[in-house]
Length: 142
Image (tube, rainbow, N blue to C red; front, top):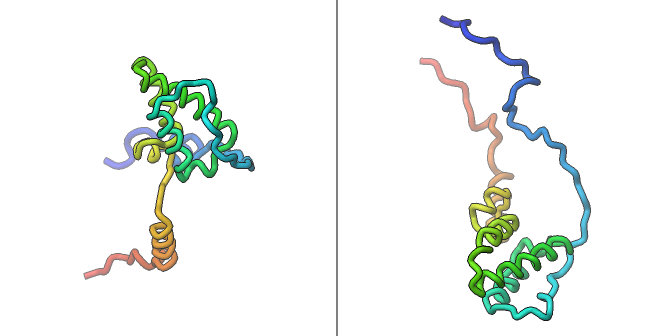
């Protein structure tokens, strides 16, 4: 029978409202080019290749000094891993995930990587798509 059960919560007390309640802070920063790996370390070949891979990623264009510094620290861990220290594998995985290494990491970070052509096609399809008012019609009687 309708009407039984607890009363509905007030809107300001509901847990899910499908919006972020966290205020965002916008910072303007200056990207910096990729530095060289520090001298004085016997770098493993895989770590050198890994470091050059980071310089080629689309995300590298936005990295600041702080992010490159974090990646240098991660490169030291990567070097230890490739030199046989398996104890650092979990730390390496966690650090690399913060930069969106795997598709799952990029999904979690809400990073979408598109080619220029894919980006243009998506923009055109959104511009030419009918609004929701044109897509949904009231049900027809009869």
